[in-house]
Amino acid sequence: TVSQKFRVLYAGNIGRIHPIKTILDAAQILHHTHPDIEFLFVGDGERFDEIASLKTREHIDNIRLLPYQPPEKLTALMESGDLHLVAMDNKAIGMAVPSKLYAAIGAQRPCIFLGPNDSEAAMVINAYKFGTVIDVNDAQKLADQIALYRSDGKIWFDAQNNAQNAAQIFTPKASIQVWMERAWSLLETNDFGR
Image 1 (cartoon, rainbow, N blue to C red):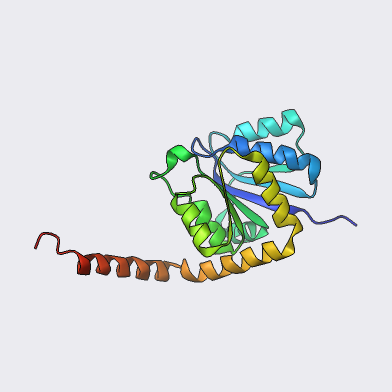
Image 2 (tube, rainbow, N blue to C red):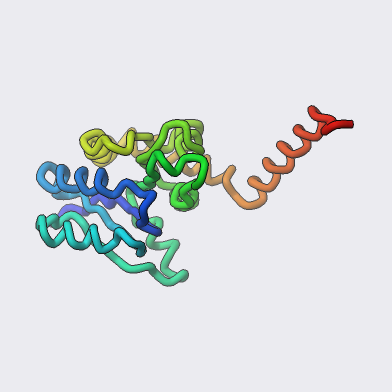
């Protein structure tokens, strides 16, 4: 019998603000220690070819690449990831919030965020406890955490349950409601020069 692969999904743009080297280093580590873990990159961007080149050059069989998928396939694609991977370089803090994070919440999957601990993405993951935040340069810790989610069902299911809970909060209606409540609280606590 063939054992099912544990899929680490990175879906979306792969550009300059994404610390791809750390992800690729972790994939190389796991290629040797956990052949049942695969990295699926879906999307495009200026660093997509870099991943394809490394995969070919280093014969890393646990990396798969797909182009952007049509909208009718997105739900199935996002739900096919056992663990979602979100990444943002430290230099991008305050300038970008990775939408991949909210896609992971929507798919109700555990998530690893490779990026600054004081960013919005890290704060959301830590607040709702549906994943792990790792420094952008720590490939070994990234590999270790992915392997842990693969091997420890309790950790995976706890994070997945918390992602389901977060998905009930991060809906368009709920998000607008939270925004409105914050706006009203600002109006009530500030007189804005009156």
